[in-house]
Image (cartoon, rainbow, N blue to C red):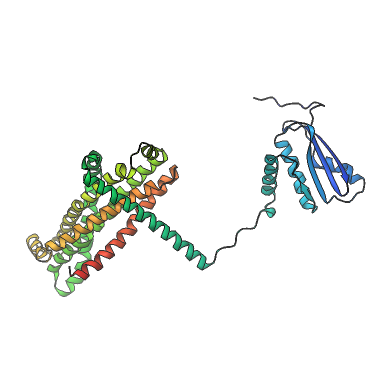
Length: 387
């Protein structure tokens, strides 16, 4: 435990002040320590106020040649001087003091007197807010486009030199995002088929078209819901995991190390994950289609007394190979979107634990937004093609 220093007569802090032409000259000397007694600003003013002189219009602080050192004790003294000058409309000249001492004193007086703080900036108007939002959106769109183009170039390099591709990492990611996701995808898809069956039965019962529930479930699952539900599950499960993994690697400077060694992070980290999702998503979509059809079949058999054979025969009359192909095309695109969104947000993450969490959240939000946009685009395109 440090022992407080005791100020002797030679090293004690000293203040001398004299008034000359409306300017109060204050000279500081000695050693200023917070653990020792120190003079106050009132001590410097006592002699000038007793003389009956008017308050000075200018106060100048400077060091004597015998100043031995200072710490926060001198900062407090200078802060008292600044506050006194502000209260008496006097100019306080600190130009002779060191820059660190001036900055500390200004920060001290600014924190103690919020009224002296600069006024807050006026709120921007609606047009300025819209303009800034548009510029930010344009910048983010450019970043996404540049990232997608870089991934496309990496895919071209893989085609030209497939031996350089990290197939082992790709197979590991297929295991994680494919086989390990079967339980949750199957459960969600089965319940989706059950929900669609109960909802469709409300309308079809009124017109005696119970058998057409098989057509409704088959087309909805094969063309739309199978790919969408699988993509939503993987966006929250795999996309967030990609972002968290890459964000942790960025925080640990592992990505910087790869760049230093001349290894492209896109080729080493992004492409194996994106390829794995692009390959496994169509298979997961087919699995989701089957589970959704089974869910609808269970409701039809238990609620509408439709036999399994009749349900299957009616569904196969409506669900064609073209409908299955539409679902597979959507699933492949959705898998690439989820993979790219997760990797992009992971590479953009801040180098902190909080930044990793924000990256995972942003990856899910970005993937869901792009999934909705892509699904709407496919709906318009397939309708224009007559599919």
